[in-house]
Length: 405
Image (cartoon, rainbow, N blue to C red; front, top):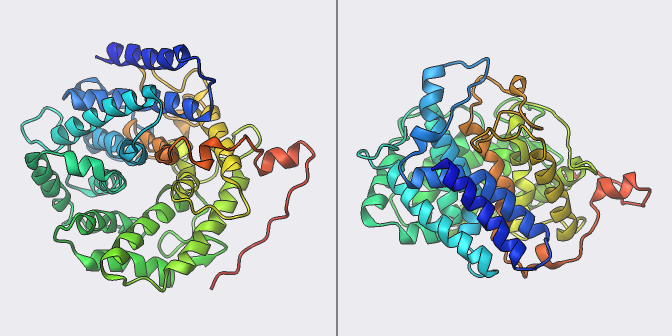
């Protein structure tokens, strides 16, 4: 099956080539996304994920048995959260529409298998790590109403049961509060019974206690210099707040401040991308590759980029990251699965909790694929991002901290 998935990926690339259209950034994103996602989505859709996905664990793994069992939910949830906006989109070239239709059908089957106790690929939904990755599944569905609308009745019921089974897990007093909040936000968005306290607790901790300044939140009581503001905090917080506000407008007063915080952090993220697409190797979970720029892609998707950076320069910067992190010959295993690392296979970069499934959070960099190809983000002429301007001798605006109170 993996061989077939590899062949299908090549056929998709050939279809673009045969269309005689110039290879643009969107095509590059789609080809890279397909190469990463196809093994996960096709396998789970065919009830073969556990049978085919290799599970590479960290050398410092803290609980090998548990990490191995939850790796499959990690791979699926993180993939779905990244491609959800694109799955919800309509239109595009005939090649893209065909690809999306294939992935939509895979996604419906994958969800159904993941929550069906009779399926070989029934996934592990209870425990600490499953709370995290159930929330990524919830985020994918929040971003893609099409999937929820087209799931059959049995799959919907079993999915809701799976999400509810995470409630006994008490989240760590950190960004984990947002994992519980995202699952409740899913219930809230689709008119199901939800717990507003789990949402309120997370939002109030970040809005009233954990903002430390200049666009950054602490991760709980302590500030950590890592990428979790982008990987989880900013994208989750804005999604949860917007959903809650649509129902009971409890956080209307926080929205203007959150918008300023998000925009400032977007400026910081854009400046962290070097001229060649590399970026500082700082903090935990660095093996998440492009997922460390989840926030910047999410800002573009929401059309909420700061005026100081154009959509075209963000597109260029993110394209450079995607290309850089996937160009090394050892990024993928011989059967097409991601290897631990940032630039190829670099297992020493993995913390104790990292495994093959964890790596698929890199798909969140593809969030902006949810914008149509006619949007300025894709259609505007290429533009240099800040690092390219500076390191080719061009002038660029100075950076300034933002005092947001």
